[in-house]
Amino acid sequence: MIRKILPFLLAVLLLAGGEVPAADTLVNGIDANFPPFAFVDKTGTPSGFDVEAMTLIARDLGVAISHQPIEWDGIITSLLTKKIDVIASGMSITPTRAQQVSFTIPYWVIKQVMVVKKDSSLTLDELQNSKKTIGVQQGTPEAKWLKEEAAAKGYNFTLRYYNSSPLAVEDLLNGRIDAAAMNDAPAKDALARKEVQILGPYGMPDEEFGYAVRKEDRELLDKVNAGLRELMASPEWQTLINKYELKK
Amino acid sequence: MPTSLAVIADSLPYLLAGTLNTALIVSLAMLVGLVLGVVIAVGLVYGRRPVRFLLGLYVWFFRGVPVLALLFLFYFGLFTWLGLSVNALLSAALVLGMTTGAYQANIFRGAILALPHGQFRAASALGMSDLQAIRSIILPQALRLSLPAWSNEYSIVLKDSALAFVIGAPEIMARTQFVASRTYQHLPLYLTAGLLYFLLTWLGLATLKHLEKKLRIPGYSQHGSQ
Image (tube, rainbow over all chains, first blue to last red; front, side, top):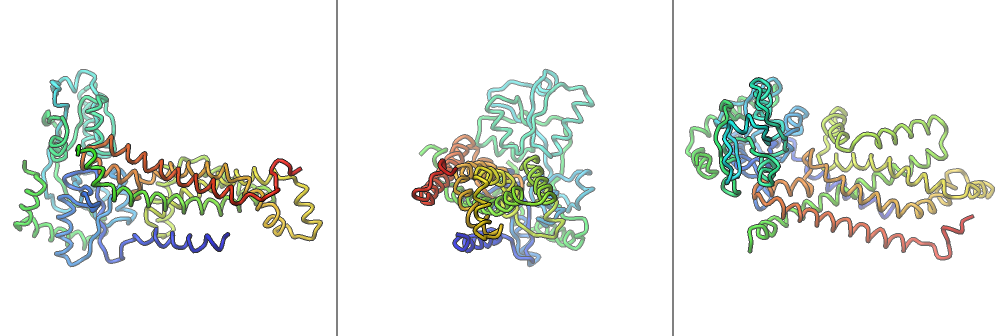
């Protein structure tokens, strides 16, 4: 019996271990639930603005790259414990995060918006002051900001946490929450596919996206910065922006 | 074709590959659990006091801590601390294996205790060593007795494996979410995921049922063992 099982067990182990990328490959951790910056395309391949940008940067640096979907809540932990080497996945540069990781130069300015149902006539004031429920992705600056803002200004909305903004949109349509707070790019993505509308900004200051690496990887940070600067100055950058409709 | 069906058709190969990963996690976990479970059960029944105490501690720990916490603890903590570079898939399989090992130990322990103690003494009287008696008299019977409960454990581990998405293992649940985030077809996609889990449960349980029949010893009755 054991002799019959053993070869199978070894085969399984080999198969399971086979997905570890080669040692000299740069592993980029992405939140695959964050279109259009990072998602998984029809063929199951990681895709999106940041995925393509990082691939171009890696090509420039002459290193191989693989993109690995990681749960957003644990993505910084994954970086710090060396499961991944870089985070190029729509991450806002915040002081709290900057204490743990090093950010590249900012490459995109993101606005924070409220999304409501298409037929909704809610105003921002009603959302903040009449005991409404707002959904937000866990572990994001907007989640933190909304919580602090509510405490500071005495707003009486309740926050509901989701592990991605598409899930918050889904629950908005289910009627469990009255609005969902998110970045403008994924909001526009939702708009194109679901019966929702963008209510508009809610007072949270604009944020900047940057790529993150471990603090000790100074050399990598310099290289990615150089690659990013070069890419942003090239026509390929505009092509990417158009392709993922970031300016629409 | 409505959008929802088109999305499912498009993403089916991707989800099926995820189903294969889930099957991989679960079969590896069940094997690890089987080995651990048998060793622990034998130790719990026949071991000396300090051995029993340590094994009891193991069972107590893995039954007491939620799988989700264990996944984080091992993937981000212990495995890294030990310098092991195990990917998410293997980590999930090992953590689920260690957890189900604790539960399986109790299944096997119960089965061993259900056998009349006289058998062990009879084996000794025939000149068998303790290990020989356990290996060729006790375990063959106890493992057969355990099969129904073991197949229960299989379906539980299968469903627990969905938690592996939190550490980024490319299994059914994680992949379903990725497709849903891109297409906003949450309901049909989660239905598909449910069907895929059902398929795996059914396949596994049917195999184990078949195994139960095949391993039955003709003329041996599990009720007439006294």
